[in-house]
Image (tube, rainbow, N blue to C red; front, side, top):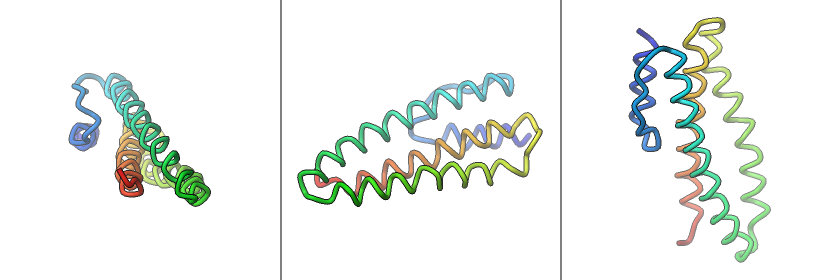
Length: 115
């Protein structure tokens, strides 16, 4: 039942427009693909923001913030998934969290952009 609720959250994500029905393993694979898409979008936006930041003289601040955000995201998602340790839904919960936080960070980075 919890996996279905997590799946609903994943499918509500802007990047995760894939059909993630099936077994838990299939949902985890689908979630991993959604995370890959979110990560690709984050990297593209970060590259654009860094180009602008270099031109504007604030690249080091953006880079430092991003370097701090990555371990924060990983730790926050590990904590979110920790109550499900050993359960089959734990990886799905972790992947869902990583995707959600990556998408949120992408939107934050877009706010840095002047274009």
